[in-house]
Image (cartoon, rainbow, N blue to C red; front, side, top):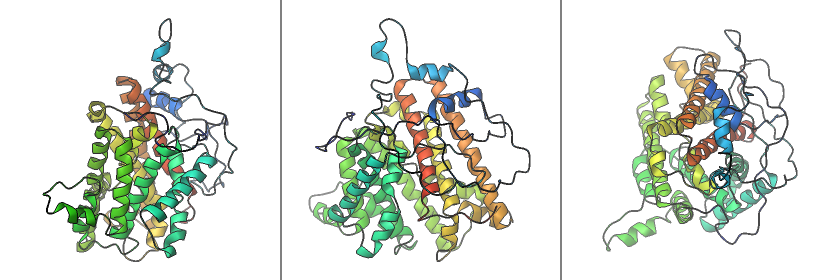
Length: 441
């Protein structure tokens, strides 16, 4: 099991940014009975009170008056008692802040100025604290050195795009419980490698649906190694350095397997196979010009989505959710809903960028517009509603699981996944280099 300390010989680092004590921005309540008291209590325990300065957007259209926000201030809920751990004589060693809970926070770093950008109007989300600027700077520095010196990831003319991705801010915001920058780097290398495969094999930088299956299969052998005869092994090993995506996969996975448990590494391989299957479905539709039904598109997005990122939240946190608990159907539902909701966030924030790119890009608003005969604005607003329902379903499923299985690693993992969901939204909201919102309000 990974230890919650340094993975290498890095200098001492500043700890994660503790939550600030400013009032939260209230989030709208779900429209139906999914807003259970368990979900409200779960959110009260998970989401720190944060206020994000934001340009005041025009109000989002709403066909019916918005229901009242859920009461997230209920005192002494069952989940809050669980998160505090047992009390009484002889229970000190059982406190959840020991192995699986958050360790005591160090003194807060100097506050960073809030990032620019505004949220999609009407989108249900939770604000997060501004990521620790010291960690952001260090992760950004290390990942660029890795990309340039260790894997030769991109030519000089792509440097601006690499910097504009702001992966340091992204990963620090998504993993607030990472014990060290070395732990954060595990997720950061994998994220950059995944995006290199997407860009170079599928989309922006020479990607094509033609022949994608063969490229993905060979790249996948960098994370799920090829076992063959002595005669053919050297050729395969040589192939791992033949292009930037394979170099990135090979290096990032090597770092990961040396820090993670075998079970965590195999879990990640499984989720990457899911991701690659989703890439292939989208590529097949592109080759035939097929626009899927909305449910078909959403099914594809359950595989072509962010799932590999939150599923390693325990590895980055320096602990392990045991394999039998990770494999439970209720846990799998939580992880799937988290991946689905965060991927629709990407569809919404990248909508304008994709409309301005060559070719036709499938995203949820585009598919809804064509299949349900809606104008662009109405299709986009319906996609916001789809996201909101998925996000509420994720939170309700996580709350139910926390109440049903209040084991320390389960609770910490659920908290980590929720933090990843919130951090992912915040990165999309603030990355004005990549994203801008459509003028629908």
